Image 1 (cartoon, one colour):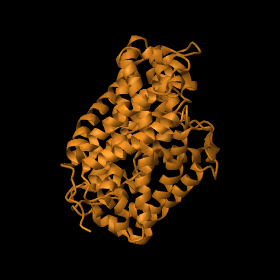
Image 2: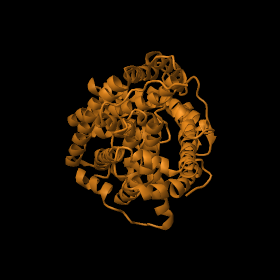
Image 3: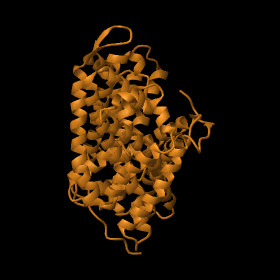
Image 4: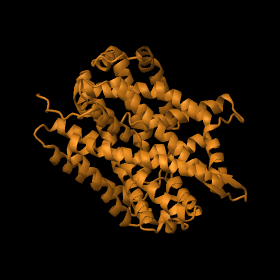
Length: 467
């Protein structure tokens, strides 16, 4: 069957910004700072950077090269690489579809809080039970989820160049400016912690960057490595079909090695700056106890209280912060939608992008509404593996993140490392004449190290082994 004529990123800058925008998401903002504070600050940072240059680099290279080599969506690319491996295409399309629905629900929460701060009502979000009352209400979460999803749909509807690439060139610079600005401000703050001690942002910065070896044992170090590996795996947008889709839009003469390095750098820098934004601010006003929060509780409960403690400046910082989070969530959500929409386009050759986008949009909006109602009408309790007393959102998050994604990544390593052979990826990376400086490292990682690390991560995520 003849392949559909494929859109291309107009330039390397647009591709890197789009891919980096996908990688820079909520995980960088609400999980990285928590893990860095928990796992010894600078110790965690060093481990994370080493893994980014080895483990993350391997997975990112594999998926981008598969996409560019096949010029197909995730749905078709794996079967193109090797006959009989189409099941990976189905899995790599199902994962972003599932994640997109609940990710947009969280995006709706971000929209709500951003509007509250922009309208000058940020102090209301600090009331006890405010966040819980909001997400368990019937209509508000649905309204803001739909608003967020419409933003995503419009961008994907406009296509690769006018939509994804054009929006990334605006959103990503704005996001980086906001991240840097807020981070610098948080380093200058001074306040009184609950115990009455006066603390500064620079002291909080020390918590992030100074290695803490107190009580370090082999077991604790293994925990640090697993935490860093898990954070990296879920934050660089691999095993979701995204990088395969984006890779399929990259021109053959683009320097893939340089682009991969830039994506790695951008993701790591933003994750670090998220730590600089959050850890000093929380430490100054709430002490080390406040650093124990992560996920939604950090973003929607702890941080609003920190902003309130800042006084008038906190209302401005809060508005800028949630605007930045909105941008980060939007670029990631757009990449998720593009991953499975591209599959529809490759499967239904006669369907236009506009029709495919509208169809996918309608289906996922319905799914997202069900997720919203999982906090009230459709609420149910689950208790299995690592999920305790969750809702529909928690269930979908577990299925996709703890089960499906590691399996997809393991199978991808097996496909490239042992079935097709690393040579296929190496040749694709070097197609433009670029020197693949980490070629030997890539081969060892994709054949041996990465599958082992991913299997360990899978077993740990499923609760089959404990640290």
